[in-house]
Amino acid sequence: MRNLFDILPVYGMEHDAILSKMGDVTVAFKVELPELFTMSNDDYEAFHHAWIKAIKVLPVNSVLCKQDWFTETKYKAGFQNEDNSFLSRSSERFFNERPYLDHSCYIMLTKKPANRKLSSSVFSSLLRKSIVPEETLQPKHFHDFMNHVGQFEKILSDSGFISFKKLDNTALFELLIQYLNLQSDDTTVRDIEFKDNWKIGENHCQLYTIADA
Image (cartoon, rainbow, N blue to C red):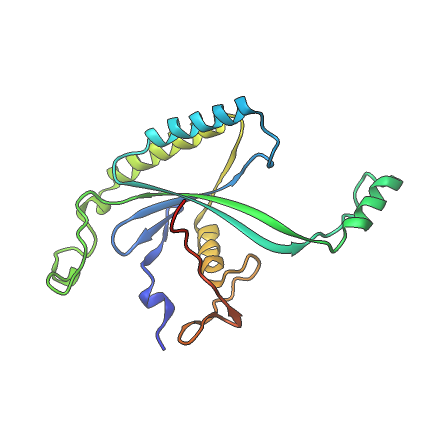
């Protein structure tokens, strides 16, 4: 048995960013997207062009990852709402405890150092003067990347179709724990087992891949 944090590629969280042991810098946003089937054809086209424009401002060696989490949960009625009319109360009673898929969306932007070299048995990172690439140690490169991230966020926010909330160090750590646990409301680190079955804590996991889009 090995300590999970000894083998994770994550070094830590600083300046509201995730730092990897290879020198990568990642910032994350929790975003709110338009409701499904609420946009017209022109809106979809405009939203698509906003994405293209935003992606073009990202620097070389950037990686964009958009994650959509769907978690099965139950609706909790709001019987204490200000709107206490007969129809509202009836609606809340009807939907109370009914299962549905709760949706959360995250956008992560990663900057890989231009001169990063992969470790191997021939050339170990332990033999270098510095474990991380030199570019990662220079504050200028981090500030330049954050300027590009700000432009990316502004372009999509100005489109009017999406809202951003940048995650701070605490929120990034909670997101990492949720990712490892496959949980949305628990920050307890569970054991991960890759033996006969893939298990995280008491939960059995399955992995699906798409071979042909």
